[in-house]
Image 1 (cartoon, rainbow, N blue to C red):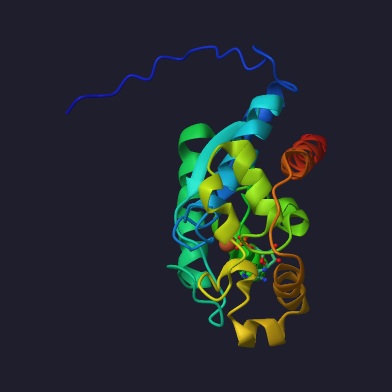
Image 2: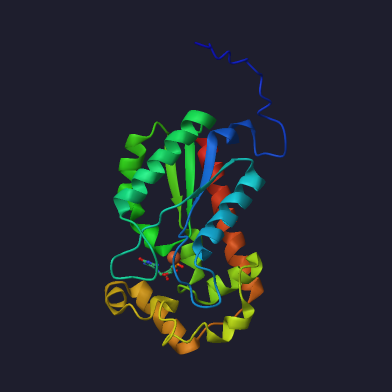
Length: 238
Ligand SMILES: Nc1nc(O)c(N)c(N[C@@H]2O[C@H](COP(=O)(O)O)[C@@H](O)[C@H]2O)n1
Ligand SMILES: [Fe+2]
């Protein structure tokens, strides 16, 4: 049997352009959706790429550890525009991932950057997640969802242009909700009845269509990155 000798190494936690040496205890992980329709102009993993951009940018600017991205996503049953999983399966996957971050990277606090509206009910599982992993704190940051407007609408189109994932040749078709009913979640009548936010988003697409505004896209992304940086500063104070 080979004894694995772990050589003790003095790690330079304070090195590099970081907030301070304690940021290494903080992990930032992205959560979106990889498999859902966002109209003809945006890819099916738009939410995942937006979440990953915000999480990675915030980790670069703060020095906190970028923990990658969660694969599964949840969605309410009244909305069927992609492949989604139960809240329990999503929570179990997050617990497994964060346990691994604790074990291998000694992460003590985590910020989950969520960019998919269907994951919002994850809040209900926060106690379960915190109870099952030996971490101090888990924050779920939904800032980008609070500011982006309708599903596949002008906010996501404009962020998509900034990120280079927008197909501009299809922009004129994006608001054709007879064909692409997922835009603005317009075709999901039950969801519109149950959630005034979804109804408002659908009406916006029906009344105003979809437009591209690069500075609007940059503004939403910067707001989201800055809100994650604020969460990092809050966690450093604990
Ligand atoms: N997809 C979704 N599921 C829900 O349960 C929601 N409440 C919402 N909310 C609205 O849709 C936008 C999110 O679209 P993405 O899925 O993030 O692309 C969000 O801005 C709300 O307007 N969405
Ligand atoms: Fe989504």
